[in-house]
Length: 229
Ligand SMILES: C[S@@+](CC[C@H](N)C(=O)[O-])C[C@H]1O[C@@H](n2cnc3c(N)ncnc32)[C@H](O)[C@@H]1O
Image (cartoon, rainbow, N blue to C red; front, side, top):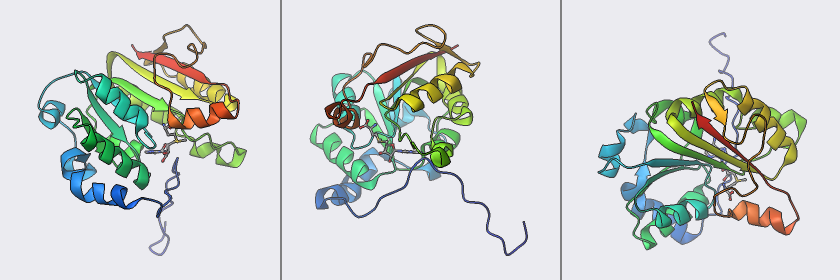
């Protein structure tokens, strides 16, 4: 690379769409980020210090508008939840809901999940990782943007405790097949339902907002559940 050349742009699994936050979602960032937000600049998280206790930890990647994350955090006060999302209105809405329900077992990152995994999540520190309805990037030229790639899956496996669970779901069959192939090739993970087998559809999880939209259009659902060896 010469001095005048820019470094290549990393391939991202998302496009941040700005400017559609409501006023309350925008205000939430100012009012509640200090309480619920975590920042990459803080480096690796010592979870007991972050949550003030040592409880089971669940990470949701790409929580969208936060409905599933809030539902789970409300239903399981005995567990701690961490959400990662880059969509500003989604982060704002999740903050509003977290505050409205007085949640004390939830923290959020508003950054790229890959950076958060690499720079902030200690190895072997998570009990569960949820990846529900990641953007399918259906066009062949965009397949490289899919978040489920070997490097991402290896990273997730590294962050799980032994016996920890990685739960994924999609309503795009070609992406489900791609996920299955990538996950089966990860030596650190074991398919809970047997080699190259999908989990029962909607296995032990709430219906997500994105999923509900797809259901109205008659989409099928594929769940995948893997365990850290
Ligand atoms: C199709 S939506 C699904 C949202 C939610 N899980 C649901 O089922 O309703 C995928 C979400 O993942 C987020 N996302 C994609 N890549 C991401 C990344 N690298 N880091 C954080 N969020 C990401 C997008 O902003 C988007 O909100």
